[in-house]
Length: 232
Image (cartoon, rainbow, N blue to C red; front, side):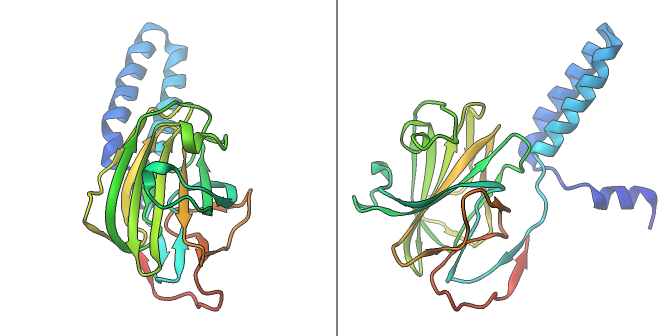
């Protein structure tokens, strides 16, 4: 195996959404380096950070209708029952909500927590509060996917944060989506909420690190065994 191939295999792939941003960082780096050479090294560091931000590594997803998989990399910031936002149209009763907060160093590609048909996609304008705050679920700009699964309706909500100002979602309403399938991303630092039926039982705790497409957030059957997996 050549050195070039070894380096290529060691580096995570970059999502196409990030190409233009990396190019902008690189051009600015060259310009400021030409004006004052010490700034060149700062620009190189920021360009590398930008490339890492848009990294899109392969993940190995447990596939089961009994499992809820994390839609995001980051830290579990909330586990508990709460009434979902009204725009989801999921009723007025509290549902299990599991939140994953992504900082600016996490991978920001979002993945579907369960397999199903996307019944509706709801975008709502709002504020850009710190996404770690609980009220961000109701007040911040967000994009929600309500998915019809074998266990009933679930929702996964992309929430913009203090730094994040752009939510990207390439999934479409009424299409089918696979567990662990990529459906969007958020720039730069944000949070995802997952709302689940009352039959779901959380498998994570606040403060735990979650990996998109791999970490099991919740189960619908405590006795379920880890099933076949899909790498994507």
